[in-house]
Image (cartoon, rainbow over all chains, first blue to last red; front, side, top):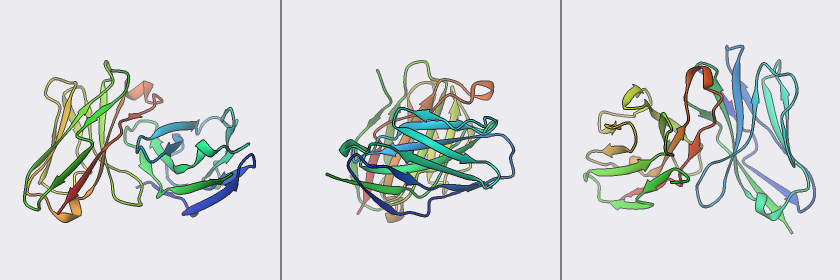
Length: 114
Length: 117
């Protein structure tokens, strides 16, 4: 079975600075997808960024980028120029290429200080 | 509608009562998922539909949980004889397709917060 681990329950960053959230996963599959979701207090899970495991190039979406280390099974999220609106729970998630369900980590609460 | 709609947003029930949670997916989305999110934890998969067919129910915690999607659009998650450990946020998600197009993202609703007294 696949597992996803987020070792940082809480992180704090100063507005306009950069923060990195960690995620590791365990799988025997060679091809899969990885995701970062943001969950504000409204509870809706919002897709931030996704990475296909067969792609060596790290995904980027504006201020959000990932550091995907396939051999180490590591998938960290970097948020640059942090904004107050970035404050939320962040969840790392895994999905098999041929599967459907998402397997989530336990989440990291990100606080942004003005 | 523009997004996944879930109702009610909050539900309080006494232990032993039956509850029904509704999910209205994005129009045209073939796949529909239910997840359970306990307080302070990540969501956990419950069940998956492709159109009206329930293809995976491996995450349902007990036979008190039942989900249906009779016409391939709206889905209902029913919990019978509720217990305190059923208290959680129940999230519904939909996606456009599956299989070869499984890189399609899942779009989530705002969830239903269920509290069992």
